[in-house]
Image (cartoon, rainbow, N blue to C red; front, side, top):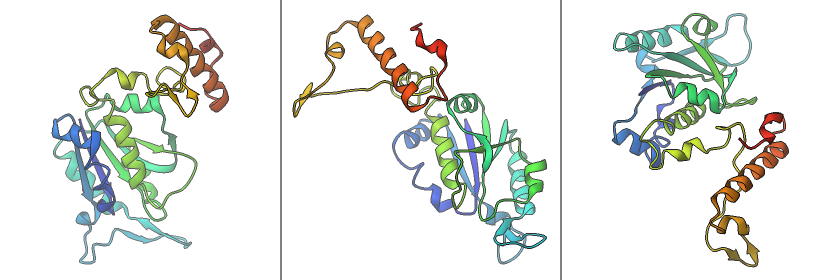
Length: 231
């Protein structure tokens, strides 16, 4: 898989991809993450990529021309399944969407900045818009890193235990149940006896019941009544 990220602040994305799981995934050749500086596609000496909005108003707007030039250059090298703009008012990012994007081969993520992008970018150059929540950040770089992380960890071979991603919160419509590790008793706080029983059936039943209860409590809008029944 290849993920291209277009940004005006490429240094912001150096850290998230240079360590841990994402670093190993790149070293294994399971994913290629390429960050592009939008200013490299500016047409003037000042490397200007933003301008004032027509009609006035506060804030600068990313211009369509450098974005189009960058996308054109990328598309001359390969076909892209998705060109995604990270936007506060886009489709809310969730686990099913991460699962869907993990099946793609080539993706572009466009990180917005300032007051956003020229609307013609959204109308003509992208295939979908994604938001990580109903709030505003200074730019789309952190959302791009978040989306990339969520996608890459789902790729075959990225996690040492591939079943781990399948038991994450939201993969089965529920949040994850509580987890414990050694010591079994710490400061008088004891782990549930069922988890130390070795009885796999009872452990699975306990975990399912805990996941249902936690989903009802913490994500009531996410819960579906049919999930009360252990499959």
